[in-house]
Length: 83
Picture 1: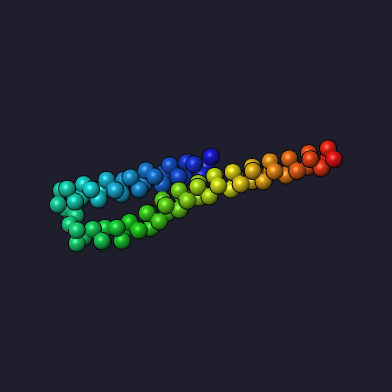
Picture 2: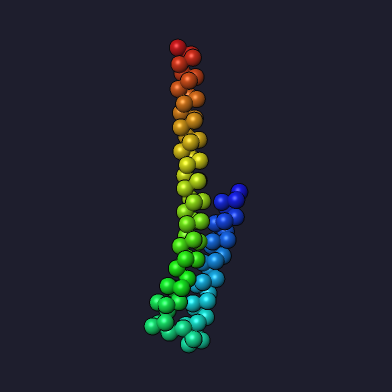
């Protein structure tokens, strides 16, 4: 559950950064030349947000793998007991 909350927080942070950049470009406060510096300053937040999303994906993948392996082992055990 905590990982899901962290991933949601990361998604909201990424969305906020994107909106901030778009608003800055539209208002003229952020030029294409200064955009690089803007994203450089946000690099830590972006990396942290992406990591939170990756952790959620990895946990989901591991859960599915463990469930499948467990099901295969249970099926194998049943077959051995029936022989």
